[in-house]
Image 1 (cartoon, rainbow, N blue to C red):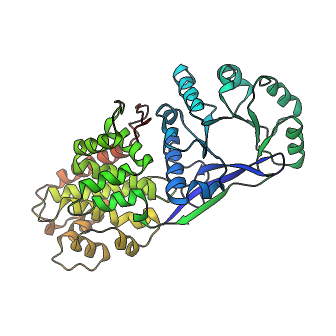
Image 2 (image 1 turned 60 degrees about the horizontal axis):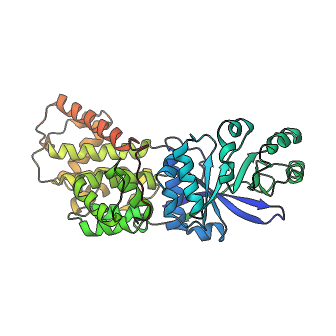
Image 3 (image 1 turned 135 degrees about the vertical axis):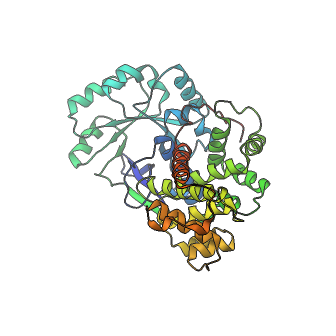
Length: 422
């Protein structure tokens, strides 16, 4: 499996690189905008991979990493999880500005974080940002297609600001000369270089999500190990606490909160949450559709097992259903996946296609796939379902609802502060 991050250099007046903007990339072909991925998830993914997979210093050669933060993440104090010497917090121009946001930005400034406004215009400056422009260390301005007079009028609004001015979308020599004459000191655009995509091959279980997933998939997961895996990764800890605690602030030690949260969720709840986060992290397709299908099949097999006279483990049935589509989600061969993520022997035989006629796991998987495809083979007596045909249809619809709920971003705007907790 490969991890990807987009990167575009920011230059100074001497044509030296002064920093890098880090951009979300799901695969080698995807651009900055990817279907079904919101801004919160993009930023978390970029920082998770930048810190844990690539090493942020390696990506930027020790220079600042400019990273877009949504309002949600600013309000949740997400930036405090990272070294202020390594990142520049970029505030999008469409952000809703009120006293609460200003207080958060002021706190970041006092804590030594550099702030960048992306992108300042005459309209949003007049409406939102002129009163707080002193908070920003860098102000981005889209200079592409603008004439010198227009830019002079815009810069007049910033005459009392001490921020560095960054001209973005500089595409020609003449544009560069123009913005340089207007006292811009930072530059970005195709005139210097296009964004590139950095990739690195990683094993599933070398990532934090993969380690947690591998532990959850064991017949007897180690609760203490799950706690330690989450505690060791600030991003994962933030996401977990955001999920289990919702609107309640974390005021105590985060390790204790993580332990209590896992107890509240139970293994089934932890397994579902881990699976969704894992699928989002390893998904290399251009949408969440394959990831959703994998979760839906896993859930369907699990519910079928619960509704049948069988000795099959519902947990192992769930993971078998998941792994049956994970090769398409990740782009990895199934054999490689099975070498890393462990399911019980019978489920593995079903996935490898080596199961004998007595293997009930294979029967459940075959039935689930046939049902998805509306095949006549879905009429499968060997499964010994205690359900009629209509009830199976209702069961599948319930699994679809479970999948939608699991992937829904129902945690947006739920405040959680991790300052000084991790």
